[in-house]
Length: 295
Image 1 (tube, rainbow, N blue to C red):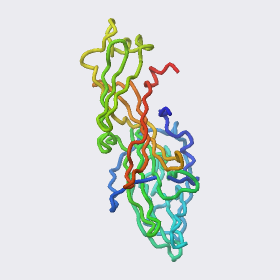
Image 2: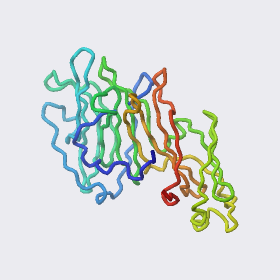
Image 3: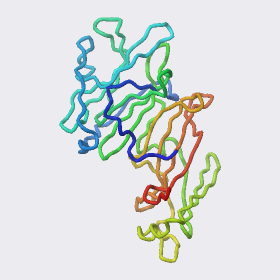
Image 4: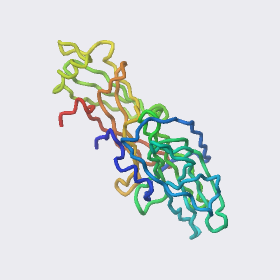
């Protein structure tokens, strides 16, 4: 499946309920920087959020963005709430916070909370309406930068453990080692070491466009200084969680770019959990970057 440039057209409907997947360090550490804001009012609209009910602590935020129940093995349940402290004139949420609370007490007892910075269209996502073991938080940061974080839910304690961080550093943190080389005639060789795999991407049909974009010379050979491609996550690529063959999966987009940061091809990864509960690459596919896509 091809990665879409705009990752969620319906993201403004963040008040609705969703559900998502995960892997494994036993401790949870939430450390996010204030990412600032981009002017995205036209793209995201101006969503409205209701004020958080009085039964919750004021320290959890002012506005409720989204909430969902966390079923526990005891038969009880906690509530997961996504909140923010303020909404600016362009619809951006400031002081986003993810909290787990026990509503059986008055006021509701805070089990866990984490600050998630600022962003547009923040969401909690799940793999399906029936699968609650993993969730994804997703938002647009400054510079149209889509970020997502996947958490595992402990069904006994209701607490969250971060298992995947999808930021611009994603290829490095997940040790994705693809390299690409542009060859004569618009052919791209790709190679990865883990697992060992070689593939070709055929862009011969758009060679004229590659020449026009000054990636290739008139003789059909690549510009020597730009022939080597590296894997990056620009931030506009997709990130989602869904069910795949009865298993929760995470799909993440990345790009092969030149030294001049020109995107030539897109790479889509599908992650599933291995026997140890860690996210590992289950599928990988390539597609030409949109300017070079003839399909």
